[in-house]
Image (tube, rainbow, N blue to C red; front, side):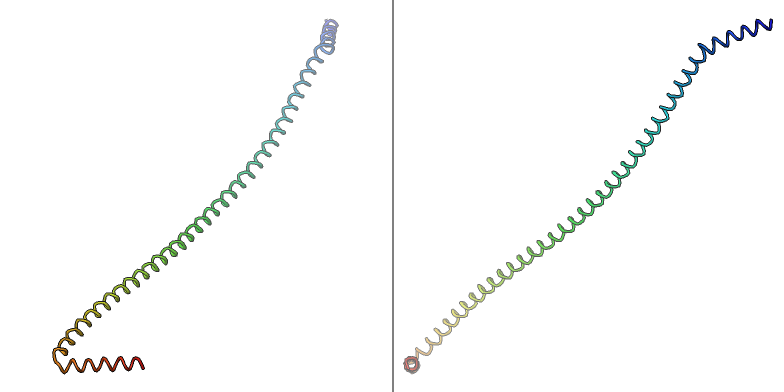
Length: 157
């Protein structure tokens, strides 16, 4: 019985060694190759993910810098617009003040002309009344004629 057991075991071992183990070893090698390939792909994917993370960090940093630059430029432009508006407002205010001064000067000159006309008319009226009073008297007429003649002679000399 021992003989038959050894013989059966030998035949089964021979069949397994000849036909079973190569198939099992091939499956184990295929599985090992698949696992190695999966690990390699995982390493590549991890490296690509790290590369993408670095690139995204660089892009985010550049975007932040660009944002700060744009904000700074907008602030600077706003300040320039405000300064320009102040300058334009000052120029406009100066122009309005100068126009008002010219208008006041013109109105002042008009008022002075009106006053001079009024004074001249009043002077003429007063002179007319005085001359009428003096001319009413004969003696006054003679004095006035003499004075006018004297003034004419002095002017000609």
